[in-house]
Length: 443
Image (cartoon, rainbow, N blue to C red; front, top):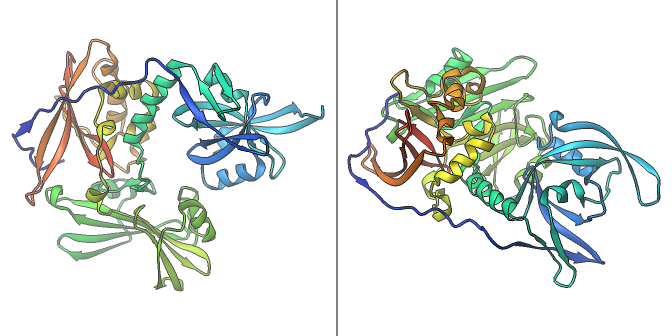
């Protein structure tokens, strides 16, 4: 895979490790209404308000909220753990459904794998109970100030590290950059390697074309890729738009599918969209464009008939501050804690690992490579020569910034970790991508 050359001009800038809390406490403000205290939380990314209830054995969700989260794709079948019986305040025994909350966020505190109970009452109250507090540890409740204070310093430190790195790998702005197993800006060969020859190819110019694939009859949909030569792509066409159009498909984005009612768009993505009347494959309809999220929908008779994820002006959306500058301590924390799927999200679509044995990069689709790209997955897991070899406590890194000159003359910034004492890795180069800093090259 050819890349534009990196300018020999480098500027070394010292980046200081961020000051994590080693002493102190975290005070969380609650809201009080009719004598009941509530705490704002996020459950698998969804913002909810829970009643502060140290007497409850579990975190609990109402059936109504659980159904919404299943429809949004925030709770999957793998998260359900079985049936649980519990005693309510009247002494009666009630049946509930056990479910695993993969990520529970309370202010800056990150809790993983918290057991919760789905109450079989449609509008039951949401309770923050002992299955969460047991992971938090010692707390102090102050009803006068309407606060509770978390005293576990280790939990605060680890949550700050994870929360900071999460802002790097997950886009805080909310831009969508992958869909149907592919990631925007991947190269053309990834598409045809996974899907084969398209049903239709439409050349717009020497620099732009469309690849159109008809999915199975069970899905009744077409998958359309738009490929363009970008200034920094060294003449290779890159994926700038992924469109799914039709009546139904297995693919979804945040729980929204072809055939879903348009009301699900508003519930999931909000109402900050530009609406226009258009002619679609199914007659007259409307297009709802969320330019701030890089996604649009076509709707016919209140039913979704098209979903389109597109490359936008990411330069304007990219912002940097001290918290986003790459930190080796945070990187090692992620290597130790993240799953293989999460670690794959650290790589840009055009990354390359240059080694004496073989250059490694995405071969098929972004998601397909998770199971098919053995060179990549083995490199990540290799504790002697691969990415996880950096967990060795003797290995250190220095931060620097390098300038990159694109073909069109523009100057970009790369962030470099120069690795010390490693038997195999000399440097890790990161570049801005949709408001994040992701691995672009490993040498």
